[in-house]
Length: 284
Image 1: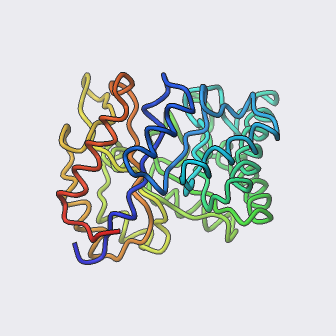
Image 2 (image 1 turned 135 degrees about the vertical axis):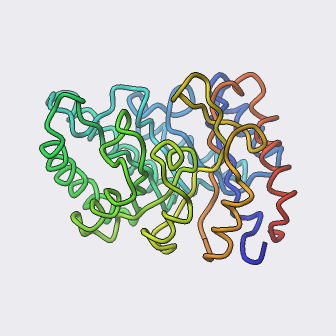
């Protein structure tokens, strides 16, 4: 590779969700991680439970392990989090969830938070949901600006997000009009919505791709895929790296996998490490 370096690899706590936070941080330090993507979820850092003291304690633990969070990823999909819900209680709880993520990002000195804009019931008017999303994201972007944090937007299937294409991702960024809003890509989500890395680079522009969720994906049942390790799946990850390398990508690659790697998450991270080393990325 001409431009990409091993320093851009961000190991993660995603697959460690059956282990304690202490074990997880010990493991990430053991494999040589520095910049990491941090999944804010139980049992490590559930935003519904944390106190201001918990945030400070976790910040200290990260520092003691020489780990820097470059992207805080609050749970966006599995818990009842939907900031454009028509249920006022769910909407309020979800917005509070994201505000606590921003408070934590500020304490961790984290530059990015990944927020899913929310999803709309399949039997609901999609345009009405879009209006609610612009209002909510404008509110959250205003808070993010005060903390100096940028919000990452990711396109995904409609079961997870109202941003179901790169075009909608761009539309959201433009309509909110905040310097705190920018883009990212998820390689498997691009595959799910029938888009390519080349297309995302061309449409978003490399300067608005500030993070990449990097993994392969394998089909479990027709139309249902699972995040997988680099060498296990249908995606050509070497090609994706070559496209991003040629475009001059400067962000990180978050190693986002969950099951079936929860039994040996450290081995999963080591598989990512081996893959990136084989791709001939520049040294750190």
